[in-house]
Image (tube, rainbow, N blue to C red; front, side, top):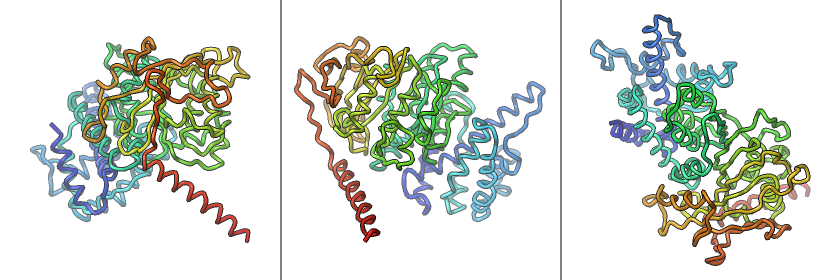
Length: 495
């Protein structure tokens, strides 16, 4: 129904000098799509209020509503191009008035309000459609989209997910924006979130985990109260990057959550010493960014200090998990065997403070453009404690780890990605931790207590030898060159 409209919009953006990548296409589509959605939402709420004999107060003032500046209608319900702005007038209005007005909503005091989200979105992006005529063309296409029925919203959510996937595949940092949905769905099937639990992703990216968890829970027979709980008090996320934050908000809206609880912040700036039980969550699902380097002042917030972003996030997730809570976290497979102090200390913390019951070893190509192999860590926090062993009453929480080596039997790529069928065997065997040609168990009592090495070594097929990709090797060389340059610069200043 709406697929051709999305294609037409992309065709116009392709001609636009200010938009050069899939990231730009998604960003510019997102803010326009958001304003069209907001207009449909407000008009629906106004109609409901009128039927109830109640007044309705619009969020936006009249000059800034979609139906005023973007798509004023004539008597026949068509866009009145005699009233609609176009060309330089349209571009200047959007840049100089609309974005400034919408950005002003960021000053709203209520942190979780819909108005606050509007302000954050439009304070952190800009219009990159430099031609007012291209912008008019896109708006005319966008106005044909409707958010009235569940069927329409479902199609729009699928089309938007396709845009996110294309954006994720556009560059080497694909895994940062797009986690394969079949992998997310398998993780959720293992974790089994339930109504009433709070679900969290502190590095939510495009909110794929939260959206899939919403679809999983919504598919059940729910009461009105349970549906309201899903809308308002179930899903929570944090995202540092402006573009990903905007996409996360839009993605959750299209999946059916009108006011997403997503905060635009750097999660790692939070001091773990300040976390209280009220701040914790029942379920954590995440694919934190890896390979990044955090500043030393950020590292001060953590007991195990390291510049590796993913290792800091893993500490954060362990701390944020409630007693009895469950987590599934994607991380580089080198975490299982690296011998540096931070890796060893973090493995020790995880094994001694939580029950790491399952490790899913993913094949190369699972994440398009990421250039690294990954594993998924499934763990739960004991009810008594999830503190370091010297503070806990029960000693080591992990007694046995079940490994599953995912072998899809083909080389994966953009045209042959991971699918749901690839993970059926894993999900089924994981229920009872069955040993098979692809799965085996390791007793923690048998591992080296000096390194806590958890390398993927299948006793039935020998050790799985992982050869690093050329991209990963080049990244490490670049990082070492950068560190050497910093040291040389310091020495030069001392001379």
